[in-house]
Length: 115
Image (cartoon, rainbow, N blue to C red):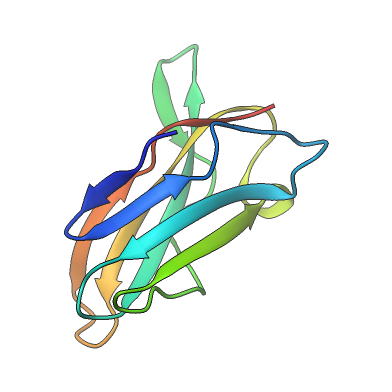
């Protein structure tokens, strides 16, 4: 589990392994050190070990939870809606300035596992 940062915005899965039997979903911690609010969009990707490629599970979708300037947040993405079973995943995020509607940056989380 490692944090990734781009343009003063950090994302970090709170742990490396999430369990279908005990967790409700994947929780991501966010930190927005920008001076403006952020509207994130996300795409969940699953690693295909046969083709050695990341395959989108869900297309690019607006995340309903915004990131307040200077704020820290945690969001849980529920298994039944966002993920397709056991495997290796990452989440691609695009961060948009909520006032100008311009893309501020993008990144993918570190990989995590659903078991």
